[in-house]
Length: 101
Length: 314
Image 1: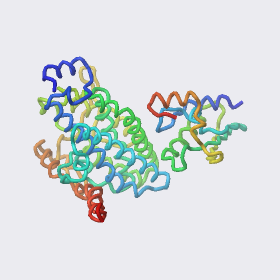
Image 2: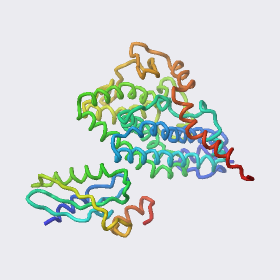
Image 3: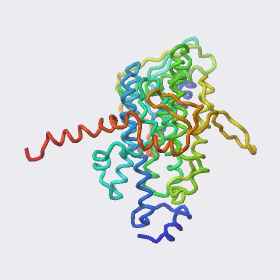
Image 4: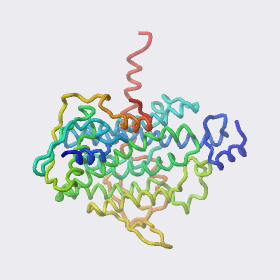
C-alpha cells in the first residue's frame, strides 16, 4: 500500500510555486520494501534551481511516516515532464496565483 | 490631477490609486522615489550576487544562485517598468545615471566574496527585502505596484530558503566552515540592521507613511527583521549581537552594541567600541562603498559599447 506515501508527498509544496509535488505531476512512482521507500521523481526542467530543496523535502517528509527507515530517490527524465502532467487541482492552484497552464 | 484633500480621502479610506490623474505632484514624486530605491536595490543585487555565485561549490548550487539573480533582475524590471508608466525614461535610469546616484542600501557595496557570504546575504539581505516589500505588498496605496508584488514575495521566499538551508548546512559542518560562516555573520548582521535607516526617534515625519506607500516605520521593520533572523541564527548555533527582552508584556529585540557604530568596509570589520552619529552613517552611505562603481559598470559599460559598435545606419 503506497497510498499514504502519495498523500504524504501531496503535502510537500514546490519551493517556487504554490502547488504540491503530486499535483504538479513530478512524482512518477512509489514503492516500499521493508521500510525502504523508493521514489521515482522528475523535475520540470533539467536546470531546476530548486532540485536540492525538493529532494531534501521529499526525503524529510517520507522519513516522518511510521515504519519508514530509508528513502531512495531516483531522478528520472523519461518520460519528460510536460504541463499535461499537472492535475486539475494543480492547474486551479497555479491559475489563482496568476499562471495559466 | 486631484486635490490634496481628495487624494488624502482616498488614502484614508484604503482605496487604491490607479493612475497619475488621481495623484498630486507630491504623491507622484514620493512614489517615484520609493520605486527607484526598490528597483535600484533589486538591480544591484544581481552583480553583487553574481560575483559570489560564481564561487558556488556545486553545479546545483550554481544553478540556484543564478536563478536567484534572474529573479532579482525580474523584480527590478517590475519597479522600472512602473516608473516608465509614470513618465520616467527607464533606459536613462538604468544606463545613464552616475554610479553614486543609485539608491540601494549601502550593504551591497561591500563585496560578497564567497559562497558562504552569498548565502548569508540570501538569509539576511533577502529577509530585509522581504520585510520591506512585504509591507509594501500589504499596505501600498498604489494599485499597480501592490499587485506586481504578488509573485515577488513568493520568489523572495525561495531566496530566503537558499540562505537558511545553506547557513544551517555550513554551521552543522563545523570547523573552519562554521568559522567562516560566523565571520560573515559578524559583519553582515549589523549592515542589515542599518539597512532599515534612521530610528523612529530621529525621523519625525515620513511622507511615505503619510501617503501609505508603506505601512510600517523603520523601527517596526527592523524589529520584524530581528524577530525572524535572531531566533533562526540561535537555532543553528550562530552567534548574533542581539537578544530578546520583554517590555510591557511585549517582545522587543535589543542590540548588544552601540547603534550606529564605526564600520571599516575594506576589512569588513565593525568597531563596537566606537559609536558614531547618524550624520556619520549618512556620510558613509552617500560616499558609497568599495564595489559601487564596479557593479554599476557591469551593466552600464556594455550597453554603451554595444551602441557604439552597432550604429543603426551602418
